[in-house]
Amino acid sequence: MSVQAITSQEKKALKTEPMQLVLLVTFLIASLYAVLQGTFFRQAQMEAITSFTAAQEESIGAWRDRLIAVENGTTAPTEDRWAGLAMDVTFPATISPGPLSDLAHGVSDVKPAASRVSLWRSVDRLFGNYQFQSPIDTAAGAFDLAFVIIFIMPLLMIALSYDALSEDRELGRLGLLLSQPISIRQLVAARLKVRFGAVAVIVLIACLVGLIAGSAGQDIGARLPFMGIWLLVAAAYFALWAALIAWAISLNLKGETTALLLAGIWIVNGLVGPASLSAAAEGLYPTPSRLAFLSEAREASAAAYKSQADIMQGMLLDHPDLTAENYSIPEYIRTAFLVNKTVDDSVVPILAKFDAVQAERRSFLSKLQFAAPSVLTLQAFNLAAGTDLERHIAFEKSVRDYKQSVAEAVEGNVIVGERLSLAQYDALPRFYHQGPTVSGALGSIFIPVLFLLALSTLLGTIAHANLGNLQNRIREN
Image (spheres, rainbow, N blue to C red):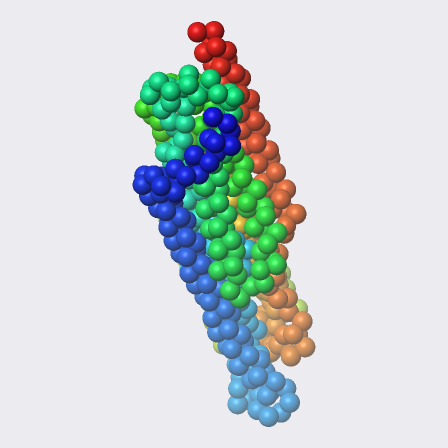
């Protein structure tokens, strides 16, 4: 029997054997369902940000119209004393969904994506919900295409191929096959090529559907480079499992033993490994307590309100030039600004401590994740999709910094109770956060992909040698 005959036989089996058909169709349905869920998720993200920004812009537009009316004389200053009030300046701050957030949710489903930057809010209240936890913990719960590839795809590959060699040996037909012009290496390679090829085709179909379906409201061309990077990660992980299964087959064990061995590796890779890494990180670098953060921030806020008189006195001593003789704006506005400024200054070291712990934890996990390919691949998927923890932490920090820059720009007007002029308002900074770049995504996944491919090459080389040795032993017998 030739290689071509084996290949034809395998292709026919994929179409006629009920169990293989059920497995492949189930995997296809799961993949497309994950893509559909991801599409809805991304659309909800975009709609939420669009509606939030529109509502804020409408409010800002009304505030600006009142200021224009006072400046051009349509409204007398005494009729609208609040027009141009510096303390009421607000701006929206948002982070755009990752270019492939529909395929790999990452932490984008738990981290804040929008904030209303207002001087009435201290930095601890800029976001409705702070989350400080492992990116692995937050991402593993999402049923997206990344989840399907990392956890379900290997199970399908194992189920389709664990008996690629053992079945012939146990049925006593291996010797007959090898009497034909075909080697064990060619036999195993031909079978795995067809079986794994079917899995690869389904993954490619799901990715293509996801690329098109998830591009609503966005040019496909903008997503295409990131999809190429994402597929590179998927291909490296696919190659790892293909090589791993080939290695297990080359051990020439019973079919059941091979299946159990591969199932055990899957459990270690997908369950035990991530749990162990998370436990180790938690033991060495405990997750910062959100409750502790809020408690410390509230204590700072309460202390600031109790010492309002001292804060005001300190301001007058430090900035006598900002004292107005006729202060027409209620005193509580200036007090609120100064108290929030004090709270912001008090919260800075608290946030710095949280950031330091998170940075140490991420650094620790970035080194240990190579021990669990599923974790490494998940991180690489998130980095390629723009849904990684680093990006969202950078967004939160940029919002806090932006709030500080706006406060510094209008501080003089608030202290002396002076309206902002239209020119001053238009000159205020607007929030901008840099989105993911193709070069950045490619650079971030380079080492993980290289590691997965190197491991695949090593396992493939060992499998190749084992099959050659097995061929020699059979000939000797």
